[in-house]
Amino acid sequence: MGVEGCTKCIKYMLFFFNFVFWLAGCVVLGVSLWLRHDNKTSSILELKYEGAEAPSTFYISIYILIAVGAVMMFVGFLGCYGAIQESQCLLGTFFACLVILFACEVAAGIWGFMHKDTISKEVISFYDSVFDKSSTATEEQKPAAVAVLKVFHETLNCCGKGDTFSIVKQWFKDTCPKDFSTVNCHTKINDLFTDKIHLIGFAALAVAVIMIFEMIFSMVLCCSIRNSPVY
Image (cartoon, rainbow, N blue to C red; front, side):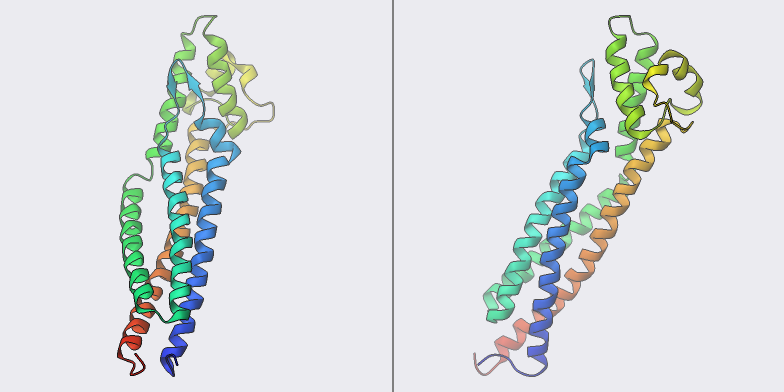
C-alpha cells in the first residue's frame, strides 16, 4: 500500500514534472546538437588561415550542453521511476543529482553572463586578423585569405569590417555576395552568436524553474514516505 491523500497527488505531480524534465533534457540535447552542426556556425568556426583558426570557446560550451542534456535525461528517468516506486533511496539520489545540476547551472549562468560577448569578440578578432593580413598578402597567400573571407561574407551576407567596406570591396570584390547589403561583418557576427546565446539562456531559465519544483516535491514525497506507518 502506498502513500495516500495529498501525498499521492504530490507523487503524480513529481512524476509529471520529472517527465517534463526528461523532455527538457531531450530538447537541450537536440538544440545542442543543432547548434553544433548549424551550417552558419560550423562553416565559420572550422576556418583556418596561416596556422590560426577560429576560437573553440563556442564548441566547448556546446559540448558541455550536450553532456548536460544527457544527464538531464538520466536524472529525469530516475525521478520518474523513484516517484512511481515510492523509493526513498531513489528519491534521495534524485534530489542530490538535482542539487548538483542546479548548482552547476547557476555557476554556468554566472560565467556565461560574465563572458557573454567573448565568443563574438574572438570570432571578430579572427576575421579582422585575416582581413588585415590580406591587405599585405602576396599573390601566393592571397587565395587562402580570399577563401576565408568568402566564407564569412557568403555565410553571413556581409562584407568588410566597420567603415572599411569600400576598401574590402575594392580588394576582394569577388568574395562579397552579389545581393549583399552594406552591413559589415562585425554586426553580423554579433547578431549570429547573440541570438544563439539568448536561446540557450531562455532554455536554461525554464529548466531551472522546473528543477526548483522537483526538489520541493521530491523532498516532500520522501519525507511522507519515511513518516508513513506503512514503512
